[in-house]
Length: 308
Image 1 (cartoon, rainbow, N blue to C red):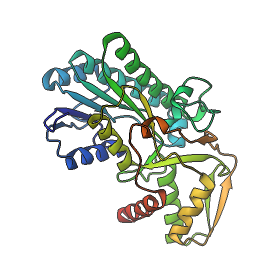
Image 2: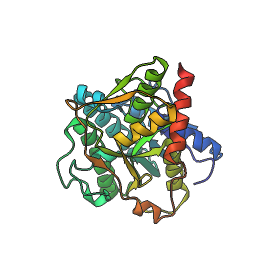
Image 3: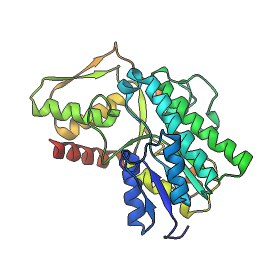
Image 4: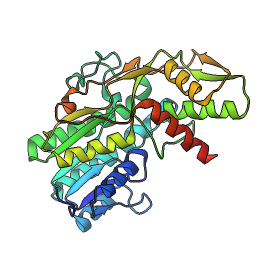
């Protein structure tokens, strides 16, 4: 792919999309199409087709999605399913119809079964029941992956799906209604320290384990797909190392020098017991992450404090 290739990046304002845009620009790609939601509703079939008819991009990166943490997923499952299906169906189908050469789709580690063997391999998709708390979102992501697989088989439409672990980094939301676990913990402990609270209450019992990756590493992975001759397939992408929510909370607490206690609300769900991915498939192609979790947490604390 040359530096003048016309690239449509859908979702450039989000956590993943903004980092992908920055990485493309840093790598001297000059012909990047981005459009705000108020100008292009990706859930509208008519608007998406008109956009592709007018611009005819050569490469599409689909980073646009309705996303959120466990609370948002439990509260709005219908929206998570409908909006993500609509976005994916429109962008994938019209990419094919209007001659896109390569499509990159961002999946999610929540596609794997709740009781999945660990670490999770790409082959474990659809081998068991999903985690109920984010089933709507997971079903949508699985449908997007399968749609691309079938378009490749039936039409020869070339695509790569990256399945990232839990992402964090610049532009992460700190709103507790929509934030993911790492940013929510940073907010809770930062606020407790600033307000001199004696304890922080957290959901579950802290036993659930999660794998985290800085969004900048994920963006490097997207670029890696374009710039290297890797197979058109599914690829887990992450650090390959997980941490319990309890240990993550203690690490953030330590970084903030917060002296209060942690109280676990065991009436609230833990979510999937463990999510650690087997990343051997993409590392065999030559890709690896470079930003470690402790450095990333320090960056997130600074980012949150700038918002205050």
